[in-house]
Image (tube, rainbow, N blue to C red; front, side):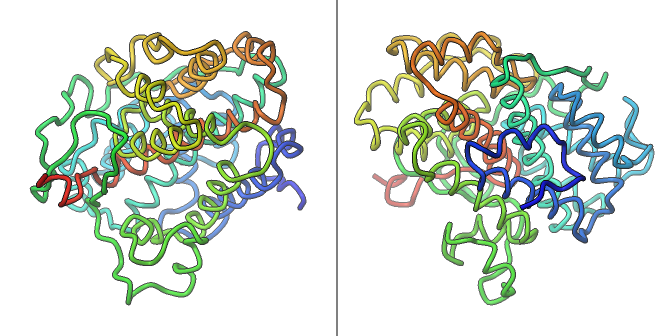
Length: 381
């Protein structure tokens, strides 16, 4: 497959390690920006540039500017148009503080005239760009260079200084977890998903064997089917691909990213998988139990507690995954050197980057479109 001329060229150097990951990343990009969408391309590139600025990725910021990002989104002031302002504020929120998003934040969007398809498209864009920024950072770090940075927008998000909802109840009144667990959880959407009977053939195909059509999460994401199909293929390639990093450590990286982003649902799924693959329940639980102080944007002020008590290899993996997961990724070439000294080769390092980066995507979808809940049997026991 030829590298598209409309994708940052540096991603081509990632192809040798896991070609399916790269090819499906390009497919997701094409689906978002080169296929017809319910939001015009200039706005999509403008939103993507905003994400890149918040996350400090100069390469993506310049790229989306060159693709014709809407001029109304280039400065630090919010747009005057009510609908566009609501969209920008939502992009800011789920880029910077996804764990502080609430049902009320979603309620604001329809009031401003935003449709469910636009909501899901916006969440996918923010989530994909968050993943892509970390993949490109990984490309630079594996080459021994520090990624080039850009300044963040000079404005606060609507959630700045907000406290996280720890009420223990979802908007529908279901019991909601407020602490990390390896137990199985369920997830409830804030945005209406298509009914199974309403799904088109393209939407069903977009599940890509990741789930059946009774999954409300995948039905919701099928509102943007081509992006979902590529995302599902990336998920499979990153976590099920042969060779490279042991499965347990890919799942560990996913759990660490979910801790940094404060996604209780994703952390439960992937900590449980890490325990199953490694048989190291207590070490995995130690990651879940680590205390993380957070700032006004709900970003961790220190990552040290996540790796406390781990052996040398897991400690280095955890530190790298956590650093790559911060809002403005803080992973360094020195961390790559440390991992290489512990015996990780390029294929293993690529898997570590991919499994961490993917959860910048997965966490933001889960946190912006719904909330976790206990299964009925667990809640009543």
